[in-house]
Image 1 (spheres, rainbow, N blue to C red):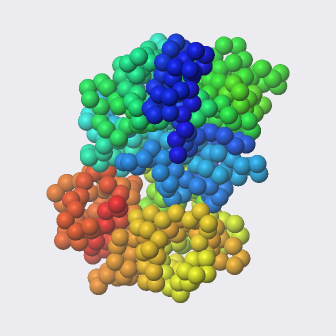
Image 2 (image 1 turned 90 degrees about the vertical axis):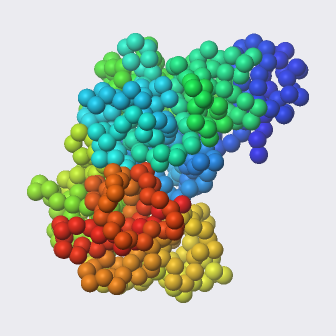
Image 3 (image 1 turned 60 degrees about the horizontal axis):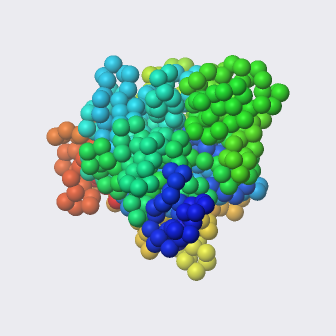
Length: 569
């Protein structure tokens, strides 16, 4: 799949043969050739922070989540195809748009992955792979830091493996940092490393460059993306490696240059302001020309480190965005909006909408179309709120609008059982699911871009327990994400699992593990007891993605006793 581009000038004749075999450089200029892959191109692009769902909302702008192919990192690939449900609140996305403005490709791109170091309990931040991380609790300063697999900042510790999403900024001393929009605890066995920063001390002879004090080693198999760009000093890059650092050295498997060269359409980019000179500046490493007369007052008020959203047109040759509008978070912070069906319902203080934990139990929550008593699995809601004050792992709702039925074209999540499967008829089946104590059935057709998670297409059989993300239409549901439940069908779909009390089910990241229990999502405590753990023989660990079926033998508030725990693979 990979193609290799040579350097300019006299180096071309000398390096052509070598470049066809390996990624390197010769001659002056301090650049490396690049290889093809998932990158920029097409007719438009949006880059920024996920601030909501229903479809997917990037810095306040909504995009259809049903049309694109999604890519996310794994232990073996920097950008493997993934389900739409892999996108989480606070993620950094690169959304490629087609000529109609619909997403065609979505890349989920953490800025840092690795061990926490230099952790400051007072809240000033920490480092990962030598890069400073700042957290944000002020909505006017950008998206508030959202935590996954952590109760909040206090749950971090030195040596913990984390993934950090965020925007790149430069402090008063010229040092780069990441303002975190999401921090995720990873399993201690995480082998993957990411580091984001500006290329310095590029040395083609040794195949190295530096990001701060970290040395990046470029080898024969290292890929550089996008294909039309070449690595050079001063560029903002994201480095991915399948091996932990050796001292201060990271062996790069892939280097993604943050550039819009080759992109010629409409652009939206959100992030921190840096490198300002008059009406020119950078937003998260992307150069912006804001010289339009209509933007003069907005530009005059910009400050370094401010989080803004720029919309405009890309110059494919230079990669510069010609701005037509600038929105400052300080003037208009984006609230979180979650529009979809409820899953993982435990109580009004603990349920999921598009995988995001929500607390709608506050006294000031305004309900329309129902009340907190109306909330349950399968109910369609439109929720506006904020990440918990001070940063946290839950969205605290301010308004909740309930709808009796999702409208045509709405995004829905349903968990249920497959029946009447007809693989020959474009993969159609019937999904039986539960809402408000009643059973419902929906006809389902698989979309051309359907992706399976926690299993494969061969497991889609009658009787299978699945959770689908789909578009609601007058004729039924068009599913573009199918996730297989690791729990027994009797519990995963609302059965009682043989228990005298109702069985509930929750999905999320395990954290706070001790000898008797752990937490999931927004601090839901789970007692392990004698629960069955799947796959058999697998040990529980912080940072794992799990599904848990549990009962409340002493009633709500009296403890959550696990019946079955499934670790997602």
